[in-house]
Length: 337
Ligand code: ASP
Image (cartoon, rainbow, N blue to C red; front, side):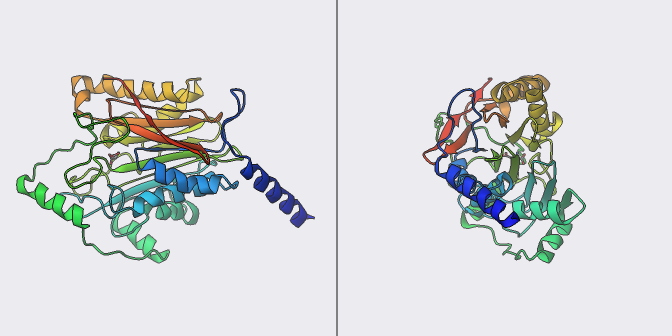
């Protein structure tokens, strides 16, 4: 009997998967849906969508989605990314599901998929966060291979270049220079994107939300520095009753306002995802005053209706939205200054 029920359930999922064509009307919930930060979000969304479109769980989608970005040697997420100022790549990541389960790793070295280690922390330990050598030890015990400590070719070049001046300038994600176009953020000279994070939030066909966030942090950062990305409530927050949000940009300033948690709480008060992101950005600008022009922070969010939105401090942040086989597209984040 149970088996038959499960068969029927699967049958329903299979059929609805065939008819997933995204949003139907204003009164309907748009689900499943996945959104993620920056241009890498398109490829990441695609992997996530492959899970969502057949009725898979949002948690699996947000893990598999950002793993694509972690694997890419051409972007600033994962082991191919720029190192800290001592020459080591250190990775931060977190994941959260519909039941407020969450896991996080930070200052993790030589492990290819920090998001999967974060998921294991969530599922296999009584803890939320593991850092540094402890996180690596846990990853190895869980069967994750220890990767080479060698920098990628492009990171090596960028580091050698940086060493010439060794100037410690903890500024990231200023992408509003003259080369900027809405859909193609600047690349640094070494061909890498001038940012270091992918954040992804998704709602599955059952209406459950999950999110993930993964980064190498700021290039040439002080050794041991953590940003917002592995911090639940800052870089990522999910509340299955309300919505989910994630952040990118200058992590210190996202932490100051518990950014992603703030966005979700603003949605709880009735704001749309876009307006909630906007209010959070306004709060950072209020705190930073005139120095806000020197930094970038972007938030993206979805709510339980499948509405989505994003906002950033200044021009140059875009995000990827996917809710159908033929709908995976970039949206330029609206900006305030
Ligand atoms: N938020 C990340 C950090 O501060 C970096 C980024 O999004 O580019 O580590």
